[in-house]
Image (cartoon, rainbow, N blue to C red; front, top):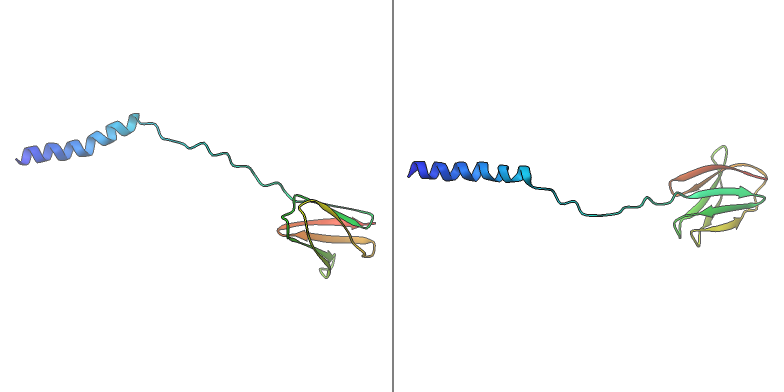
Length: 103
């Protein structure tokens, strides 16, 4: 009786590993795309935005870190006029930060 139980226990431990060596793993076909990065550019007195999350906030800071203006974005792509003096500014949309020149 002990021998039979020992053989059954041995078979239960050894056989699954023997089958596992020949088994192929199932890998689901999931295609993940990277989100497009936010593009920020400036010309004249406008700031052009592409691929921004709708409803996010565009923040404009002076080079010394003072917030100059804040604009709520109504679409992911757009041009927003800004009435600020010419110069260098730091633009932030969410985690994206860019330095631009307003001319």
